[in-house]
Image (tube, rainbow over all chains, first blue to last red; front, top):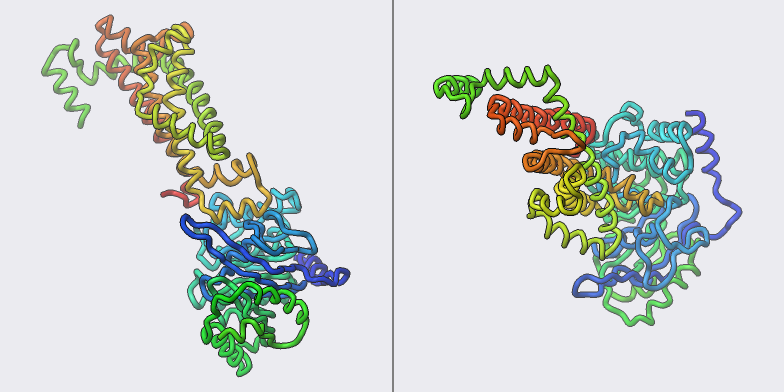
Length: 303
Length: 242
């Protein structure tokens, strides 16, 4: 417990030395082939995630947000553009970016909760033997599952499984935690509780998280910054600073929710000539660090 | 019930050369177990069986790993299983006798053949059934190649693999007894099949039944003790039963 706290304090200190963004996504187009078509999942998407951000990618289904997350995870290579983590080009999956999936079967059913959390620590050689067990126990305790450390995943509820997955991801202390709609398969009550717990964990350790969701309230609640994507193909519509923590049900939060809703559903982006979108990434960079709501003119005037 | 019916029929028929009563079979069984005939015969069968089973399983494992890592491997395995799965292993015995001579070698050869395809087929199906999520989780932790197979694919596909092993075992056991009936001399000592064959030649029909009972008992024991034990320790505990 004590060791967990010290580590928490340590990782809370941001890497002040490198002023650049932790994750830099620039003009990323991802295409994949189905049997008949070449599908463009995202088109020249760019954004930057800073250390300690709770960065939410929000968009309706078909906006390529999960695909984008997989590309950050290194499972897909962008057709165009580049993704850099700490300045390094992402080429393959790696334990510096741990994914938390929506599916409950992401836990290895043949391992207990403790073994599941310790597994990545051991296989990647981060820690071994007792040290791995201890760190795993620390994080299991943080998600309040100490009693279930020796249980097998199939005996746990959906919410508990997702907590184990989060603990497993966080125990690796990755540069960035990639969460792909982790609460989407949970019932509404559990989902709210999990959101609260995730925020509480973030208060404890200011980890960086890239969180994908299609739920506007969830985005406003979880995110410190929100990237709006429009569908077919996924394009950046706006990048927004969320309301302060705990304000999501205030007037301000409600107003933001309405605004996002309007932006997502009011206007449909037309297929535009490529040249118009070339400016997106550049524009984003120019505005990086700027205040409240930034509409992308390309996206805004399209409707 | 069955034993009673058998006993009554045996006594009513009163022809121990056709159907000896149940009690006679049991008596023969007890006598031959006591004097060590059946245990040594069974042991010799089981020894050959284990060698064949282990070799077959290992080869199946190698073949499947080869199959999932290369396109040629997949095609090879699919063609071979399609060809050999419908072929009863025992049909290869004459060939095996020419290649390996009278002895354990030939027995092992047919056993390997009977085990390998069933296990390989099930293992491959199991590997293919491993969910994308679990695969992605494995790759997330830098697991590649054989480590990926060993740490992710094999445990995740274990229910199928175990099913394959059970089928392989059943095939092997049948094949072995059949092969021994044809020729029993393996490493100087016949197995259970040979014991049955010999007893029949000497018109010791109760012994024939004793041999059959032994085969049934060993088959049941492996099925209900060994495999059940593995099952409760693995797939049942993991909640992975289909």
